[in-house]
Image 1 (tube, rainbow, N blue to C red):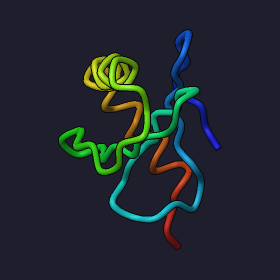
Image 2: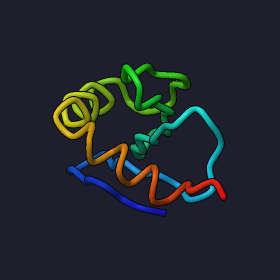
Image 3: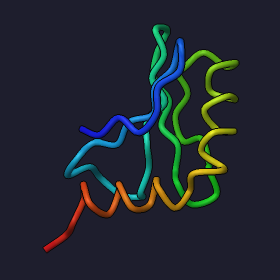
Length: 77
Protein backbone atom coordinates (compact mmCIF):
# COMPACT_ATOMS: atom_id res chain seq x y z
CA UNK A 1 0.00 0.00 0.00
CA UNK A 2 1.27 3.45 -0.89
CA UNK A 3 0.30 6.50 1.12
CA UNK A 4 0.70 9.41 -1.27
CA UNK A 5 -0.27 12.23 1.03
CA UNK A 6 -1.40 12.76 4.58
CA UNK A 7 -2.99 15.77 6.25
CA UNK A 8 -4.27 16.15 9.80
CA UNK A 9 -7.40 14.08 9.35
CA UNK A 10 -7.12 12.45 5.91
CA UNK A 11 -4.82 10.28 3.81
CA UNK A 12 -4.67 9.37 0.13
CA UNK A 13 -3.74 5.73 -0.49
CA UNK A 14 -3.37 3.38 -3.44
CA UNK A 15 -3.38 -0.38 -2.89
CA UNK A 16 -1.30 -2.85 -4.94
CA UNK A 17 -3.14 -5.34 -7.13
CA UNK A 18 -6.38 -3.39 -6.86
CA UNK A 19 -9.35 -3.58 -9.24
CA UNK A 20 -10.17 -1.27 -12.16
CA UNK A 21 -10.91 1.52 -12.83
CA UNK A 22 -7.69 3.16 -11.62
CA UNK A 23 -8.52 4.83 -8.32
CA UNK A 24 -7.33 5.92 -4.92
CA UNK A 25 -8.80 5.98 -1.45
CA UNK A 26 -9.37 8.95 0.79
CA UNK A 27 -9.29 7.74 4.37
CA UNK A 28 -10.54 9.72 7.35
CA UNK A 29 -11.33 8.70 10.93
CA UNK A 30 -15.02 8.58 9.89
CA UNK A 31 -14.64 6.38 6.82
CA UNK A 32 -13.18 5.91 3.38
CA UNK A 33 -14.09 7.15 -0.10
CA UNK A 34 -13.10 5.66 -3.45
CA UNK A 35 -12.11 8.16 -6.16
CA UNK A 36 -11.47 7.33 -9.82
CA UNK A 37 -8.27 8.99 -11.00
CA UNK A 38 -9.67 9.84 -14.44
CA UNK A 39 -11.84 12.90 -13.84
CA UNK A 40 -11.59 12.58 -10.03
CA UNK A 41 -15.02 10.97 -9.91
CA UNK A 42 -16.09 9.94 -6.40
CA UNK A 43 -17.29 6.33 -6.75
CA UNK A 44 -17.94 5.54 -3.12
CA UNK A 45 -18.53 7.89 -0.22
CA UNK A 46 -17.59 7.27 3.38
CA UNK A 47 -14.98 9.89 4.16
CA UNK A 48 -15.96 13.06 5.97
CA UNK A 49 -17.10 15.59 3.35
CA UNK A 50 -14.77 18.47 4.28
CA UNK A 51 -11.73 16.16 4.25
CA UNK A 52 -12.85 14.63 0.94
CA UNK A 53 -13.02 18.09 -0.65
CA UNK A 54 -9.53 18.92 0.62
CA UNK A 55 -8.18 15.62 -0.71
CA UNK A 56 -9.74 16.27 -4.13
CA UNK A 57 -8.09 19.70 -4.24
CA UNK A 58 -4.73 18.05 -3.53
CA UNK A 59 -5.38 15.35 -6.12
CA UNK A 60 -6.12 17.90 -8.87
CA UNK A 61 -2.56 19.19 -8.66
CA UNK A 62 -1.00 15.73 -8.33
CA UNK A 63 -2.71 13.75 -11.11
CA UNK A 64 0.59 12.66 -12.67
CA UNK A 65 1.79 11.32 -9.32
CA UNK A 66 -1.48 9.43 -8.78
CA UNK A 67 -1.16 7.79 -12.21
CA UNK A 68 2.50 6.95 -11.64
CA UNK A 69 1.85 5.26 -8.30
CA UNK A 70 -1.24 3.45 -9.63
CA UNK A 71 0.79 2.07 -12.54
CA UNK A 72 3.66 1.03 -10.27
CA UNK A 73 1.36 -0.65 -7.74
CA UNK A 74 -0.98 -2.29 -10.27
CA UNK A 75 1.16 -3.59 -13.12
CA UNK A 76 -0.73 -6.11 -15.18
CA UNK A 77 1.50 -8.84 -16.64
